[in-house]
Length: 296
Image 1: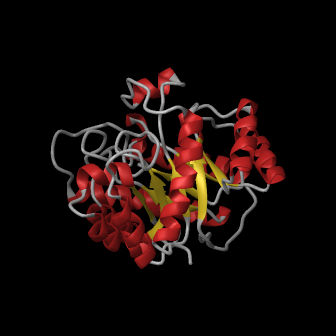
Image 2 (image 1 turned 60 degrees about the horizontal axis):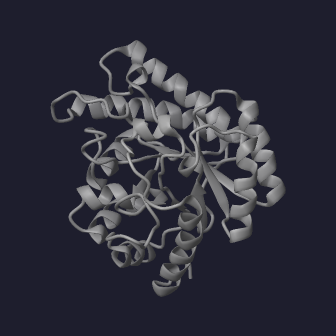
Image 3 (image 1 turned 180 degrees about the vertical axis):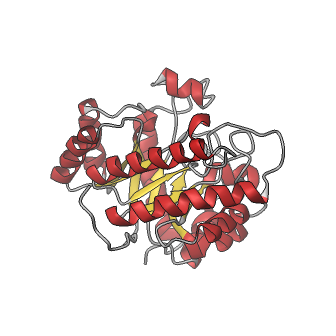
């Protein structure tokens, strides 16, 4: 990994699209998707860091560079690499996996890695999170932040809903975890889908996380086309504008195109066709940005 001691910072608003609507596996088969997304008007691509071969990401990053597109990435961790585990060896595996993810993201020229990597996905202790668990997670995140800083990448852990995570469900919990991690390259993300289940009011949640907010997922309540459901979008965009948010606005939507991935996240039906999500979703985001003077 070529080192760069400069901390990565989102410089301007960028609209992205997550490839998980098609697949969790990155390959050259995704090149035509990137090309069409560029034509539609997207600034960049977000992909899942499921592979561990940096060359896969370098090839895709080179293709995006030729298109004039940027990128971000997302990662999850399993129970054998859980940052909150009471086992030092399991926590060490978590850090090792995050370092590999950082190497892959760097090879792709990504500036952000998001996801619920503060703990293992859908892994529960069957009790409320403890102070010790938050401190364990924070320690792993701080160490990963040191490694990410060399690559100029921001780590933005994500709060998930109660059915997928117990450590961080709300922006209050996530803000506290980022504070404990105490690293300039460890920030936070906001996901409109999860907030729909866990937050009382979007403006309050966004105001809580605003000081460390560096990534946003635009996701409808049913994971279909943004703007087609009941997410309080006016509250979300007005709060982001009030916070003077600068960073990615990335559509994250799901289908059953990749059955293994869909089964892992309990997606059992189709919501909207991918290109409907991409085309109508981009139009909706632009309309909301204009309406609320976000990025002005």
